[in-house]
Amino acid sequence: MTRLKIVLLALAALFAVAAHAPQAEAASAGAIDADASATLNKFFSRVVNGRELANKAEAILIFPSIVKAGIAIGGEYGEGVLHVRGAKAGYYNIIGASFGFQLGVQTRSVIIMFMTPTALASFQARAGWEVGVDGSIALITLGAGGQIDTNNILDPIIGFVFNNKGLMYNLTLEGTKISRINKRR
Image (cartoon, rainbow, N blue to C red; front, side, top):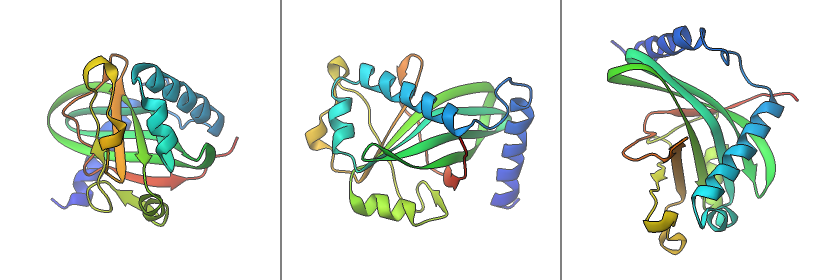
């Protein structure tokens, strides 16, 4: 089976499950902005020096809610907003597929920080950007007391994945695709 067929099957599984959820329709730009702001505030409250790190970033891509659903083959989808030095610079979606034992629906939030102008330019230059192919994202975990050592982060793109309980461990974004979308207020 080709990769495209597998991804389409996974997306079909996601949309079949998501169609029964109340949030099945795409969010408006205003809703994404409000959710992204709440997600950033939650991140800043949980990560002691998260604001310091965000201030060092060239841009921040915030996906407030990524829904992952499946039965053996799963898919995930979410919409977010890119902030370049605090200004909105576009809306994006994230799509991924997964295989193996899985059953049900999960939600998570993802924050991706572009730490260099080159990493940001490379991301913005592509119509669709696949994690692990077009660029890598170093997922960051917290140290003691909810702190990260911002001086030792040298990766050009870093990411944080969390749910309502806090930052999540042993996750990957490899193989997910991020694409620009058009949103109106």
